Image (cartoon, rainbow, N blue to C red; front, side, top):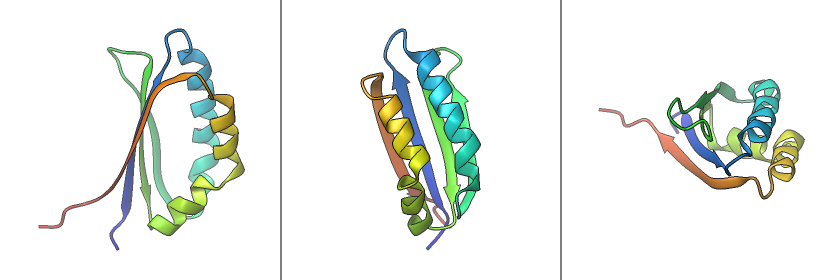
Length: 97
């Protein structure tokens, strides 16, 4: 299988962006050390500071699944419960021509 790319779109509820950003930054410290992680980058929308986007590359879907079971992911989910307006995740592979 090709490298797995994850694009995760996260929108904080109004007035909650600072808390959500702090929790996302914790993921930025922990997740790049997870086995199979090739790229783990957080972005913030310049026109909507409540909107964040993760761009990740994993060497396989299995490693990504292990990442999702890590304590730092569970801690993020608990810490941001009720603070998100929207969360969408896209699992993708590169189209080879």
